[in-house]
Amino acid sequence: MTEFATPPIAPFAIRFDAENATLSPEGPTLVRRMSDLEGLFADHDAWERAVADGDPVVYSVQSSPVPEADRELPQSITTIQPGTTAGELWMTKGHQHPNHQGEIYLALSGAGGLLMFDGERAEWLDMLPGTIGYIPPGWAHRSINVGDDPYRFLAVYPGGAGHDYGWVLEHGMGRRAFAGADGVDLRPFFG
Ligand code: S6P
Ligand code: ZN
Picture 1 (spheres, rainbow, N blue to C red):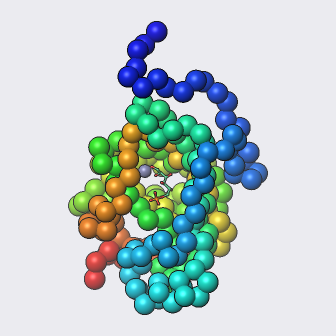
Picture 2: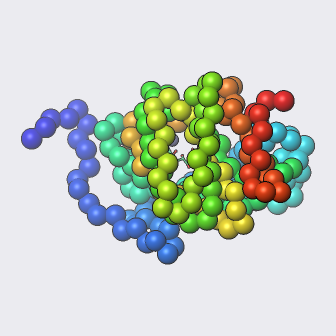
């Protein structure tokens, strides 16, 4: 048997309820309201008004009980509500994995986009149910709801990957996603 410094958890089954997009047994659930997203939307005044006007839930992340620890492989389901702030589509904060580990997303329901940025190049993947989006090592990632219904996806990632949110605040994400007349309107991040 392999010896580990920190013993991994024991094998167990996780039930995925496709209709309700839940994992059980449940781990922690994180809820991000508009007030948690300071500095992310291009229009700061519009963001402030949205916070004052009910501070809506923008997204939530339900995790399974697999810990975020080295060598473990946690999963989570993110649900992003539909909406825009001064035309900018509602989105996750976005982060970089500090030690540049990869990750996969599986789109479950609704319509989304996966924006990735490596500091120079920006890439956009349309995420419709059944699409697996691959996030290679070193690409910061942000998810965006581009439709009228909640957008849900499953993430599977290395437990030791970590989440660097400061990287995105400093470097941006290469593009911003706005609601356009014919779908998503991707614009330069700065300016
Ligand atoms: C974790 C994975 C997702 C996100 C979630 C919320 O590596 O990428 O579970 O954490 O979609 O996004 P964010 O940017 O607020 O962590
Ligand atoms: Zn990630």
